[in-house]
Length: 248
Image (cartoon, rainbow, N blue to C red; front, side, top):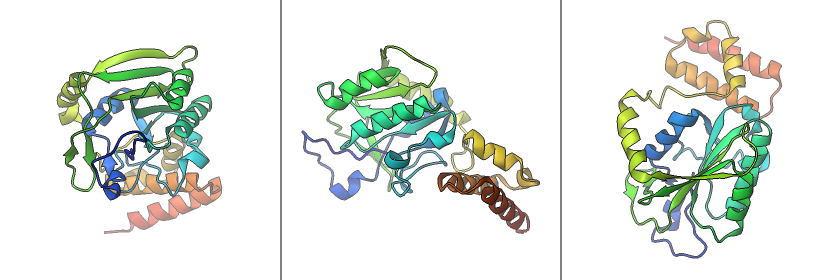
């Protein structure tokens, strides 16, 4: 998620808080309703909005997120290093994994010039600015001194980048319409295809509680990220299912 650290402007937020900033849930769910995210690829244990997330210890810039195989990832990268994330999102799209990236508006910089060449679509959020959230206490932090945009890297779209606009009020109005129907974020998530395939192949896995199913899928995903062999992943996942099934 975003580390708001603009090179040409002074932040009013203490440096130890910047790393805790989180995408507002209204914007995330507005995008998730359209793209059904399979992962949050620039997150932490404190600020992730998807149960399947990659932290700094995984290093998405080094390892990428093509292992997700398909679907769309959400990415709110550190704003002090945007260009490498833009290039990595294009790389993932070239391997069949889409990315939706939340970024500040600054058309004068190098990364934006690359963004317009590499992204499929750019949506400028107009008629207001986004207030990020402190993930430790969930309070919105006003005073964002830049506008925001989200860029789509669609593996199925080729050619010139399309530019559109979305009104901030539309984002919040959409969230109000869908929020009651949203699944519990603590027990529901869209998982990469490979995770579901392995999980579904394990006998009795679907008999577990939703909470335990989520833990198994998280473990499977981590083993895939750690590049364990298919045999190791299957054996470990079966052991975990059997252990959880035996729990009272």
